[in-house]
Structures are given as C-alpha cells and as structure tokens.
Length: 410
Length: 137
Image 1 (cartoon, rainbow over the protein chains, first blue to last red):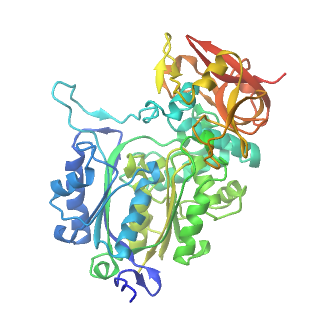
Image 2 (cartoon, each protein chain N blue to C red):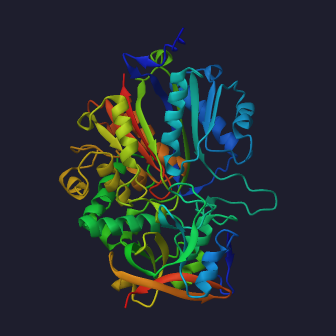
Image 3 (cartoon, chains in turn brown, orange):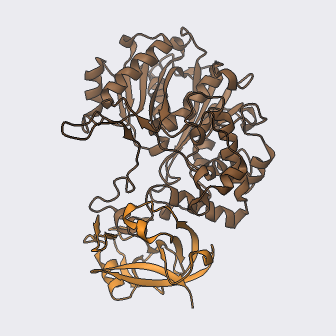
C-alpha cells in the first residue's frame, strides 16, 4: 500500500509550505549592540513568532548557517538554547544563496512531512568582545580569503596568489567579459544602482535612506575593480533576519496572507570563478527554470522580482539567466524598464542590498523578506499594487551557488 | 595553503599533488595533467574532473593562450597586495584548453583586452615561481 502523503504536500497540485512571518533588523555599518549568535537567534525567534502569531511550542524545525558559539553540533546547540524539540535540523552553506536555500529546504521538509513549522535564521551581528579584547562598536569587515588559505585548498594555491580574492574582482571579470561579448554600457549598469537607491528612499531601514543617487554619481565614483565602480558595489553591514515556514493548514490560521513557496531550484558548478563553465551564462538559468516549472508559473505572471544584487552586474545576469529576457538583451531590458517600486517592472523594492546594505546573510534574506512583504500587502509606501507572485533568488560566492524561489500568495 | 614572501605577498604552498606544477614553473615550463580521454585539466588533482580517471600523465604546454576576461584591482582587495595596485588579474584560456588565472605582466593595465593573445610569464618571488601572462609576441 502506498504511503499516504501528509495533507501538507500539495494544495490543488501545488506546493503547500508557506512563509507566514518575518522579522528584519535595519542593516548598520557599525553595530553597537554585540550579541552571541545564539542570543541573536533567540531574539529573532521571539520576533518572528510574534509576527506570525505562532507559539514556540509549535516549532519543530531549525535552519541555520552555523553558530559561532558551537562550531560543531550547531543545530543541537540552538535547539537546547531555544528550548525547541526539533525534527528537522539543517546547516546551509551556500554563501549569499544560503537564505533562499534555507527557505526551500524548510518548505521541502514540511512537504515531505518530516516537520511542520520551521524557524529560518540569518543573524549577522558581532559577538561581545572577549575579556581582554578592545571594546567599542565593531565595523563590518569581510576577510579577503574567506577560508581559502587552508592547507590543500586550490584557491589558496592559484587564486589567492594572483590577487583573486574577496568577491569584487570575480564579479568585475564577469562584467568585463559581458561587456566584450554583448556591449552593455557602464551607464546601463549604473541605472541598476540608481533605481535600487530610489527604492531605498521608501525604506527607512535602508542604510542609504535619505541618500538618492544619479547615474552621474555612479559614473563618477572611483573604479574598485574595472569595470565596477564604488556605487555598483554593496556596503557590508551588520543586521539579522528570520522567517517562519509552516504548513498550508497552519498558515491559513495566521494573521498574514500565506506566501507559498510554490517553486524552487538550486544549481552550482564551481567555487572560484576561474572554473565557472561560462562566467556570463550563470547557474541561475537551471535554478530558475526548475523553480518556474515546479510552480507552473510563467515569467509574465511575476508581479515583482527580488534579485540578489551584490553588484549591478549580478542583476543584469540574473534578469537574463532567470529568463526574463533573452541572453544579451539584459542591458536593453534595464534601459527600457523602470525597476522602481512605482515603475513598470518592480525590482528589489526594498532598495536591494545596493540600497539597503548587505547585512551578511541577512542581505540575501532581505530579497525574501521583501518579496513576502509585497505579497502580504505590507510593504507600505513602496507596495506594488495587486502583488501576488514574486520571483526571489540568491547568488552565492563567485556567481557560484544559485537558488531561485517562486513565492505565491494564497 | 598560503604563506607569505619576505615582502608580504601571498604565495602558494604546494601539496604532494600540485608540486609538479610548481616545480615546472621554477624551470620556466608550464606542465599540467593530461587525461587520455579528456585532455589537459587545471588545477592539479588526483583524478580527471570529467571522468574521475586516474590514468593522467603530466605534459608540457605551449604557454600560449587568450584572455577570457580580466579586471584591474584598484582597491587592494587583499591588503597584502595593496602596495601593488593597480594590477591586472586575468583568466586565460590556454590553446590546449584549460583556463588558468594569473596576473598580467610586462604591459600597461589599460592595454589589456578580452580576447588578446598572451603567453606564459614566470616571476620568481623568494623560493616560489608564480605563473603570469604577458602580451604574446
């Protein structure tokens, strides 16, 4: 006898796990309230459960990127700390695609019936200073090697000695190759940053709230890695966020419109950009194709897009490779559409990470929280009218890890 | 793994598997592994990344290739290399197939273009030889 599917697997043939709550802290360049990661998760949990009007006792799944205070056994340490009896415990390691990867893993776990209600955490705050260390506010700074310096690492032997470190030079090489192949102008790429910054003016949580920019501003900002300029690059920040994913049945009893995770896809091929099969035809393509096919949704049906935007070039490549226009037409697409919340093709209505700041993994989560807000109709001044279907994605590493989500209102 | 030169540059620490590549550079030779079915591959590893076969042999390449893409680091993304900016990092498609990364040398960073023909260049730093590329010819 075939096993009975739990009722949550589908709603009329559609995927039926839903995001029902969110919380997000305003990104800050300097963070004056250091917290242990576990404490940050506890605060985020209290906030997201309150937002969703769900009792902590209903939580039976935890998804994290890791815990500073427990490098090993991280999920059990968090379950213990939060007092959660957990059936689904996941550590996700996909760089900037981690939050999107977390959300679909939570949804899939709920769909197969192994758990019901999953907390998904993306905290990014400094720890309290150790005894004897200097106190004071911490400024966000990324390590250039990101672990690639360990013994046996190919990156440490080939990329790091060549200066191919951090992320900007890798994305700059994608932009350089794209310009040579398809001829997009630097002004067109600049427009992505300008429209994002416009959207950030309607988001008081944005680090660049109150600071609009023009194409001239972008063009006159200094080159950081040719052809990318300072204002095409995200500002690293501290922050944090969490979402709550649960079954369709439970979602229907919540205070907000349920946002179904109705399609998802993931793809990766490389770590260092040196080994990308084609640096201007990214793994986004296969992730997005799978997500749209799973959801049974066409590109035309998307009401707003929430695309990972560590750099302007990332957005151009995502627009193309997620299938919103043909390869090579991304520049024209950007020129012909307004990407503003009140424009004809609303994109990154929260300001994107370019406008809001990149709060560690919370930066990637910001694309999901904003899509959820838009579909739930609680985006305030920047609300996209009649928003029912959102495309959200995450880009990790060097155009490496890719996760695409279709988020659909009930 | 990375170690640092006397003037602070990050240098590769070869492993038993990658050592022949770095030994070759010291002799001004570009040697890579060649799978009998799938040709040359980079970086060195115990098995071919296409078929996972281990019947590869080391072979010497021409060092000729074309720039697949490049960037000019003007910010010093690695603080250890900040004194060298601006410097160019290139991805180079070798004529024999594999794509490698290295710095462009012996040219103005403003003269580099995608698709330009380049050849291997060798730079000695302490006891290590780094692979770079210069305009061909």
